[in-house]
Image (cartoon, rainbow, N blue to C red; front, side, top):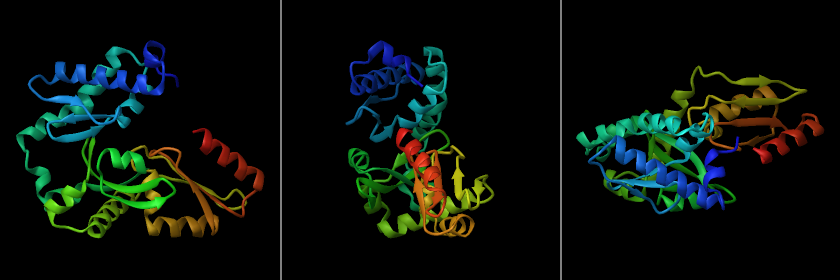
Length: 246
């Protein structure tokens, strides 16, 4: 879907991202007066007090609407409503025991993790695994400073995040097509579909259902598709091309 912001501001992707961020900050200052919202280090980032927050999820939701100012205003209100509540409990994320149940793994480009100074583990070429503190409307990236503050290792952080995602995945719907089709899909759209490829038990389940080895594609964070290397070659090519397109 083409954003109306493209028609209004587009000279480049950077122009559109900057315009979107400016409009969001304008609405935030109007909806939540007395709080400090500023531009972040990257076009898809804002700073709220001392916290860096991404706009990727908000923009994705906006592109699924009719893309009017009214739509964006309501999305901003919903998306950031809990941030003002966080001001009343500023030490919530200081306590490791309070943070643990909200930790989730997230897959992202390495340069994106660098922009947010997020703690990360290598996954593949230019792709890393980071961890986030999940909230009802948004999430916060876990940084190396957070690990030092909590006195925990990166390995412990990652293990807790994986366990939380595994628990969150139980009973969730997925599409399975055994060979000869040989593919499996997850599209829960909770922000962590792509990250579910990190779950060992889920990978084992897919291998049992569609064969092993299998490929996987994560065109965005809200979609995961796995397909068997033994499935039809032409079908594999179609899936790969669609992943690239997406």
